[in-house]
Image (cartoon, rainbow, N blue to C red; front, side, top):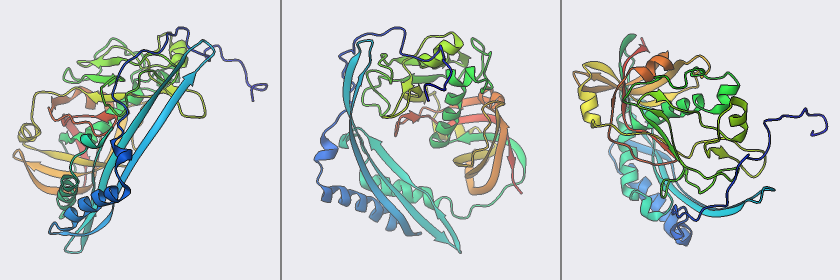
Length: 361
């Protein structure tokens, strides 16, 4: 392949490097691997049992416990040699509910570096059951334009889409609706995006990236203003920028731009206050499909959630589509919650968008 491939002047090792830093990010916790297998099974069963004991829950698609330990060593011909160990552990459960012939399912989970980071199994089962039961009795709503409230899980999906648009790779491929917007206001002043590769015990943390460059706390979007792109060395060379310690790589293949601990900074409002400020709208708890075009910003996804009337959740909603353009969606965020909780390497608080189209009955 090397003989038949043209030379790419942007490819290669970083232009600058430094020896790995001695920084303790508490990425490795021995407690998950020390837990006996019987206890791991017991914790999964306890979570499932609490869900199944909840009235209305009729079955379960299972509970799962998983833990991983890994060691990374990276060396290159510039002289860099570094390594680190990491661990992770998670517990999840997926109950099923039935009422009047209608069957619904949902889930809940907890994850972290060690056992002390996890919610109790009973709490995981209880929340999973509550999330499942609240979907029963769902119906469509008429097509309308209303405020949309995204819960933390769905707001994190919006964040993931935005990350794709602020990657240097998307810029040099002309594959982002934010191209040529550097230094401009591209979102509501309430939105700040942080990608922190050095968050203590963060599931996306590491002392150096996939090229051996130090990780750091990046703020690509600050109070709605696009400050910089997230780049590995290749993307940085292609667009005339500098690497941001954002290279990710696996065992095989070269590095690419990836996130560390990515999140929207929390705001000042509680989720209840955000919902209370909506006279009529939709509270979204699940997104379905892949109807997002990062090149144009066009956004259309199936949604599940609850109808809001008079600032209160009134009934479950399904079989609707929410649509708009990411340019407008980001600009129209008018409330950000203070309920930021990390359950993975990306997280978001509750956010409210002033207006989107809901396509229903």
